[in-house]
Length: 208
Image (cartoon, rainbow, N blue to C red; front, side, top):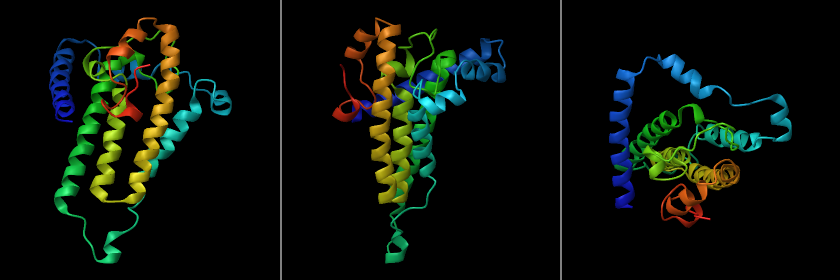
């Protein structure tokens, strides 16, 4: 766990430096950069109906993430108990780290970014930056955010949402990797040498 935390911090520092350098040298405006990232997602009404690109995985992910806005349950205050402030602060810090990692992975993917499990046909295989730490850093960041919310609120409901999100993102990542193996034959070697989502956790770290 200590090595994982050190790796996350090192990657964040490196990416902040890279992003600063790129913003100084790039002629693209922030709006143009966002437009490049969001282009070519291939979302369609037909896809939502027949799951042709894994749209149902995305829909379930959106629902689970939105459910984190629900109030904590059970409400500890009703039992006269207050959740310890240091634990709340720790959870909030974990959530903030997750948000920073989302930005990092988003920036690194660039035009290859897609919310769907099926990658863009012409997307490049990204293995640098956060992708040296794990194969799915966006999913890792989302789980850190989810865990942070559950810890900060002391809510069993949000613990259940975190566990459900773990299972969902594992399934979504599995589908994504089947497509990546077809598009990029070199993905097999990358998968064998790099953690999936959370290093050392069997449910979230498979190599085959």
